[in-house]
Length: 87
Image 1 (cartoon, rainbow, N blue to C red):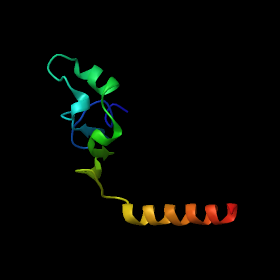
Image 2 (spheres, helix red, strand yellow):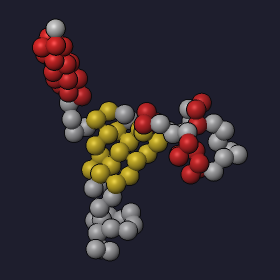
Image 3 (tube, rainbow, N blue to C red):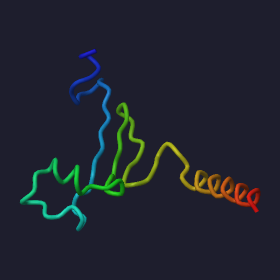
C-alpha cells in the first residue's frame, strides 16, 4: 500500500484541498498557528481547489465533474413538488 499512499508523488493516490485563508474571519494570520486557523476559523467557502485521487474536481470554486446549475434546478424542482404535496 505504501506504493500508492503516504506521500504526494506522481502515480500515487492523493486527496488535497487548497484553501484561501486570507479572508477576514481567518485573521490574524501571523500570530496564530496554521492548524488553529484551519480548525477554528476556516469555512467550507474557503476551499478553492479540491483534488481527489489526483483528479481536480473543483478549481477556483467551480465544480468540474458536476453540473452545478442542473443540480440546483433539480433540487428546486424536488422541493417545489414536496411543498405542493404538503399544501
